[in-house]
Length: 378
Image 1: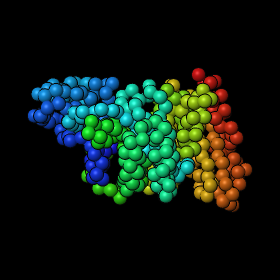
Image 2: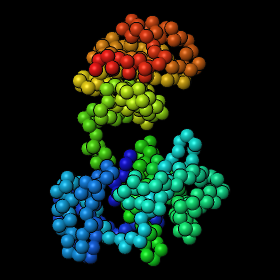
Image 3: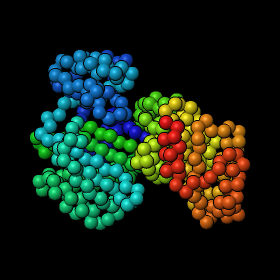
């Protein structure tokens, strides 16, 4: 779940992390009588707000004009955060995310933060574990490669606190850009981009992220909303030519990359939802079929890897779905199964079952096969 800046900063404030003073107004509230200079920020979940006119700095007495300008730039339907303008001496970029492969926290830090962070030099990359008794030394040694020692020490202390926040709040990403260094030496989170693990929602007060939930639901396409109702995750990808039916985030992301490299980009990404149904083959195919009805989508790839879930159940579900509703575009199927999944049911039996509903082959190289089909259909 992506959090709005306001709700993300409220989370940080609860853990004692310094954030600017501010207040939230709804889409219909008038601009507040704000004393002094400030910033009006649209509470959208997408990045790049400053370049879209959704962030406006205003002077004393100009809050109403700034609010009107932000709303006129396309934010008339979302809340606005009105904050004090900080006397920033230096803008720093800081990002912590969970590295699931290494089972560590990956820290990125740059001495040049702000809206043009992508144009600056590559950030420092530091991996550390909160269970490592030497984590503080690892973080500090890495930060000293890009910051003066006194500032590196301050940032290292903040990083340790933020890592604690990530664990307590089940966060996958905690990005602060900019982290503002003020003339008095304080570090203040001037902006915050935070993502929480969807599966951890039951451990936290839903009222703390109510706005984020509403905005995230509103940002979904009709197909994405239907997939969520069916019990699995689905994301539409612009410019794709292959409707990808898969389960498992790692497999799905790998296939998205491989299809792009093969010149047949995926039109979607799928994953099992936490707490969702055990079998959603038919539902995932139904969504893929709707996507495949679009002229730019030329083929469908069904790919799954089974470690312990029985192969028979997955094949039976797929075969029945294909019998009831043949695919509207060429279909490529690839299934890999481990020893446990194959218990009492062989790949030869699976191939015969699928052949009965028109699947002529279980491909060893599904990416090359579906890319060839997509090129022929172009």
